[in-house]
Image (tube, rainbow, N blue to C red; front, side):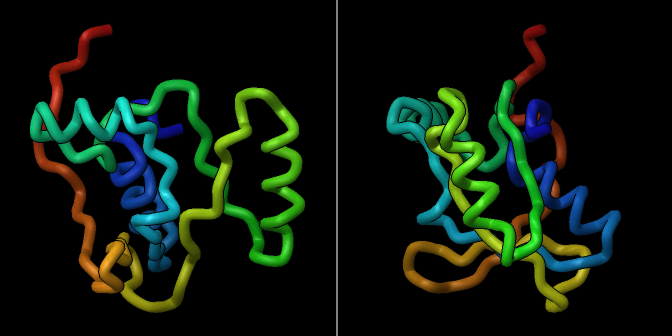
Length: 118
C-alpha cells in the first residue's frame, strides 16, 4: 500500500525488511501525465508521491502474466504493470534503471515532500 511515501518508500521498506534487492524500470512505471506534469511544476518526485487506492504486488515471475490478467480484468486494475523484479544484488536497496539504461539507488526520502492533509 503506497499511500504514504509512495512507490519508492514502500519498495525500500520491502527490500530492507526482506533483505533482497528490488530493481524497477523507470519507463515501466505507470504515471499519469497530469501527475507527471504536476510533479514537474511543483518540483516533486512522483516515486515518493502518495498513491491512495493503489496496490504493489510481488509475485513469482512465472505467475506475473496471470496476475496481470486478473488485475487488468477489473476496472481499477487496467493500468496494472510489471515494473521490476526482486534480485540477489544490492540486498536491502531499491535500484531504478533509468530511461537511458543507467542504474541509480533510490534512497528512503528524509522528511516529507508534501505535508499530510488528511
